[in-house]
Length: 123
Image (cartoon, rainbow, N blue to C red; front, side, top):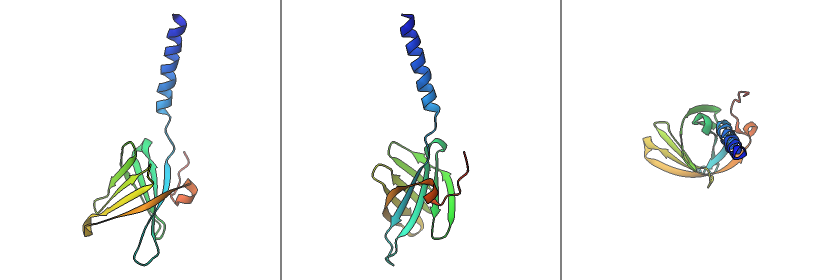
């Protein structure tokens, strides 16, 4: 009986510790079709442990990070004039450009932190 109690206690401690280990951010590069034929590219840094979504625009060097909403397979960010919804499992993104009342979608692929273009802070 004492052995069983120790095993259960050890299991609870291990599960508690596992829950505190933060998952590494996920980096995606997403392309949207553009009338010019050259796709628009946006890189994203999905950091569920910090509840943030980073947006990097390689063509301009623009970078920003904001609080986002994470659910089972989706990440959402409302920046006011633009809202993003990323379906992580399908590797797809929807961009809602609210000022011009237009939505479009893009396809994403996984990339490394180094490929993302984000200013990386050593952790």
